[in-house]
Length: 320
Image (cartoon, rainbow, N blue to C red):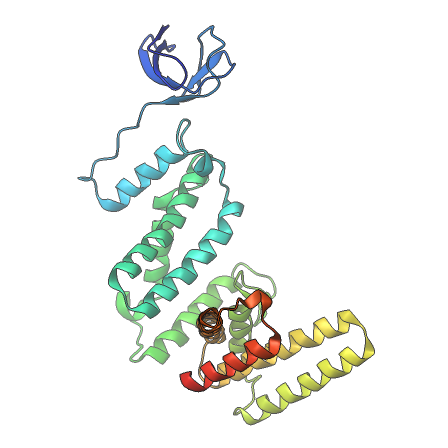
């Protein structure tokens, strides 16, 4: 073994293939260096962690998606990125959801570069999951692409077959019918609503559940009875609070939220997007309150609720 310097310096070690690999020592006490899982005894107390020199970057001449797949493979491979290597399908779920929301926010901004950047982050997620699955032979990116290709062909018989669907409503109805038939073949009991959460954030899931119920006629004709239902649920929240039973309070608040989602749906809005916009409005207004207080030589932490509320109301009036 040849060393060129000490800790964090370059050295060379032989691997089982007989080649000489140039590596970097991070110092410490360990007698093995790893090259793609190939243990090499180097008989020295100086190696704690060995990192290969920089990996070749996949060629920019490759098709972009193939280049992305190769980059992800390198990141997950031994000697790649420790964070990427330890991820699982389960650990990535929260990132998948976050990236989808960030795409929505970018689209709302209308900024081309922001949209491209966030869509790229979202595209990474199926590539990441495919790489994880391919390591055990479960599936790969081609399997994912083939599955959606076949689904699109099956569910567009008005394009790839002889069916007719002349407007968007007819297309959606046909899509749902085909989807329902496909699922019925796999299920013994063809329930209208198969499950509660649908793997979605709660507001999206609630609205989707309500839409499915509405398709079979379980729906009010307009928003008037929906508003009455909200008032009813609000009164039940008050009663639960008076009872002092926390579990009842929690249940009634959930019912109230479900009723408010129904109002959004009946009014033609997506409840998830409405709350997203309300969150953004609150944060923007809250930051303005902080700005005003700081100009007055105050911080939020040492201001009274009355002072903060007065500034809030002034800003609200200006914004309106």
